[in-house]
Length: 302
Image (cartoon, rainbow, N blue to C red; front, top):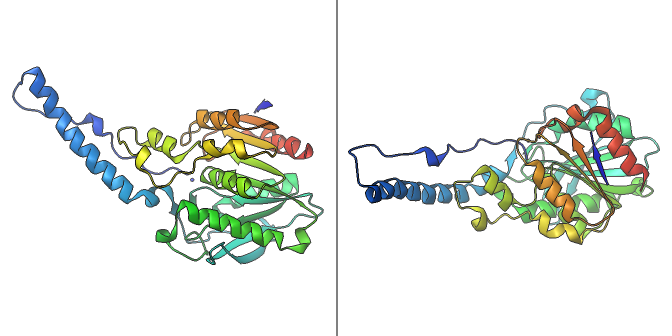
């Protein structure tokens, strides 16, 4: 089914292809060699630098909690729990009266949960959901540092969040839905593969880190060398729960086509909602009421 209606930005390196040597005129073979050699050296050095800084490009955490749901007049509970390997993590539980669903929210690669308060406000008020959002290790008030972050570490964090929710007797009568945005969409896919929810909602998802590297660093051959995979495209056919994918058709970080590819590869039942005019970080703002209506229709069918 289809409807129509920060992986936050990080700086890109300068385009290495613009470099050219100057000097005396040379014969064509020497001229070709002259500009290929420095490009080759630059490519090798650039690739090595990127691989050495891989996790600092993928994960962009912030420690300061700038606001809370209370800033928007919303009651919430500070929650502390342990990841699958024991790391202490922090999150918020935002309850809604008579909620049918509890939303387990996996946020994107930058900032922390406080940068999602406005989005939380609208989902909570318009859809009457319990919302549980948490910070991965190294983000916000969660323990750990940048060096502790990795793909597998984020999966252990997700396992801990799920275990915490399953232990809450006051939420036992609600149905659990996973919501992942950008990098969080890849974490949500893996969580759904390991522990199937009632439904899965992915917003601005990418197909894999390798595909994203080809987009953001087309002049460096890093894709096949990356330790981090987040291969959602390779996992999505293992997911057999209702799926909603939302993606802005002007996304300036994760190409819209990647969201479409992931959706096309997924099993039924599934729904795709194109957010007309939306970029990466303004989906619910540009999408407006039709965006929230797409959520409501999807949840009503569960």
